[in-house]
Length: 182
Image 1 (cartoon, one colour):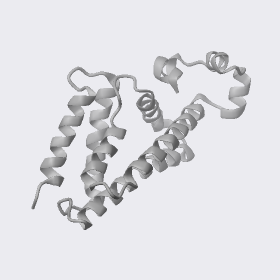
Image 2 (cartoon, one colour):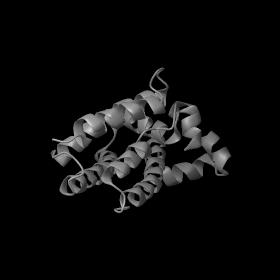
Image 3 (cartoon, rainbow, N blue to C red):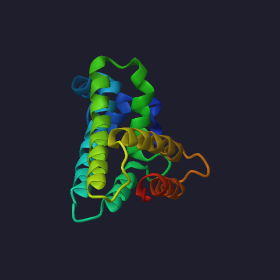
Image 4 (spheres, rainbow, N blue to C red):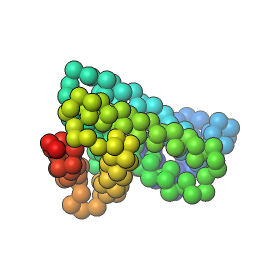
């Protein structure tokens, strides 16, 4: 993951990666078949770790939904330019146009987990009266699109769109559209 973030996929060779992890390129190809498969499995591993962290944050039902929503956003948005996790996502998205059905399904499963968790959190907040009444699925779709757009800007280092600026924009959006009273 660190190598991909540092060099990008175009700078990654199986021989170079093999040297870094103490394996031959032949062994890597045996286990992963292609760079695309290596990339996707690395993303799945990374998402597994992040998914466990997200589940732990969201399961704290003693906390107000707004606090857990802030934690979700904080976990979603990259730490800064070339964030390793987001660099993986950018590489997967870039290559997904030519991906086979299995790879697309695996990518959709990762995206779906983020979406389902957000929908459940929104539905909980609405049922508790902590959030404005919205369609949780539609709101989650729109919020994730906003987060994706901002996150790409942070991950590629577009000036003026650092993590703190993005978190401020998202907080203001949530206050205006979801946390405000009817």
